[in-house]
Image 1 (tube, rainbow, N blue to C red):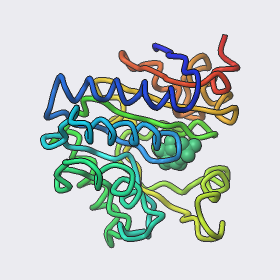
Image 2 (cartoon, helix red, strand yellow; image 1 turned 60 degrees about the horizontal axis):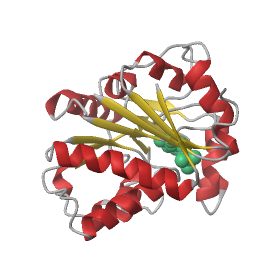
Image 3 (tube, rainbow, N blue to C red; image 1 turned 45 degrees about the vertical axis):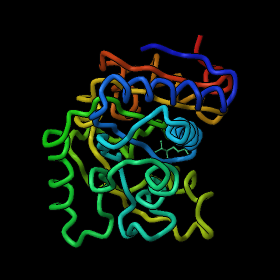
Length: 242
Ligand code: GLP
């Protein structure tokens, strides 16, 4: 794993955006694996700036997002589809029909998971996967569990994830209890992985990702087995890594 030290959140966002921009320039029809959460917001802002200055062209890019809350559709401002439109897709020349987020409102969730899972071979593999990390070390919504789950699946969110994500909801009771997430196969078959993390709250998670045992109790630890992972993090997030 390669670790890049960022001086600040802005610096982290610029560095991450530069790496994604280089990917887009070298392969204009790249498949990007995209993430939600507060960590990549600055990265998306930088990418939008690069697009506005004429540096980047998203017209041939396609994307596969990691996850979505069950029960929310794209018009809900808490949905990850809404987040992606709001933070990136509405501001660049990506063809939205080439962007993919699980359908949280699908009546047949198993069928939706199968459909979504197939994307990684239909339009993938992903050229570059952007990741945040949960305080409980989840990636996407792959929560700590007894085994790594490789396929796209419905997950029951842990109390700690519900608590961590409740800050984004008006009422903690509104946080959905279930989500759909790509499994580890989609993430691990990405050609490159770029993980961004900032703040002391992520310090233990990063340490366990980088130097702990590889175990499904620490979902991101599986990245130790990926050949091309770059972590960009600030001093607080890196404070427990020697
Ligand atoms: C959510 C998402 C994850 C994200 C995590 C961390 O649970 N499913 O993909 O990495 O939040 O979010 P944040 O970056 O806001 O700390």
